[in-house]
Image 1 (cartoon, one colour):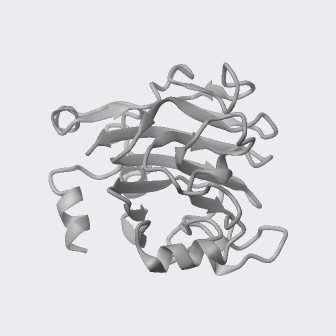
Image 2 (tube, rainbow, N blue to C red):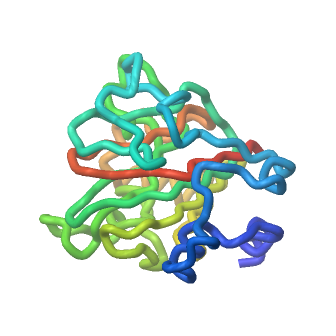
Amino acid sequence: MAVLALLMAGCGPSSVESEKSNPQSVSSTPQHNTLSEMEKEDGWELLFDGTSTKGWHAYLGSDSLGWEVKDGELMTLGKQGDIVTDRDFENFELLVEWKIEEQGNSGIFYHVVEQAQYPRMHETGPEFQIIDDENYPQELMENQKTGANSDVKAASVAASNPPGNWNETRIRVDGGKVIFWLNGQQINDYDMESAEWQELVAKSKFAPMDYAKVRGGKIGLQDHGGPVAFRNIKIRKL
């Protein structure tokens, strides 16, 4: 938790927290898809400007397909394909707010290798799982629930808000060491150079794939067939 305290030092409350604490206050309404002066000084940059899909394109494609920007949200109603950043990232901190509907399913990927021999993002990129843990129409294993590194390592804490509500994910990747936070709680961590991680991957569906083999690549947002929305997507290189 000392790491979390260090990372959060000097940062104001997240927009998710602000909305919860002041739902009726107009003056306290957070300004989404913006950076504070402190964030700028600390090296944060926006990956979503709140008005366009600039900086993103369809995985293995040239544009963002049916994804749209509405009310400051980067969203899809489903069945429009996954999207990835134009740029690659190696070591970073990533902040993303997201919202799904009942029975929803999505994910945030990193170190995605965008090449034709990999038709799907999950063949190369690890995933912060996003899913409706309680209402999904099929039984979920612990390593398939929200905050898991999907199909590899389960989250230690169930910290997601119910469908229809915003959540804030923080992902830190540095030299193969990864930490996940959800709504302010540290919920997962692993070292991709460790024997423990290699054993977990070997037991997963990713064992025969070129999964998590590289230490750099694109950030990806998943369209799993249903509605999902993202906002306040920010990254800081380490």
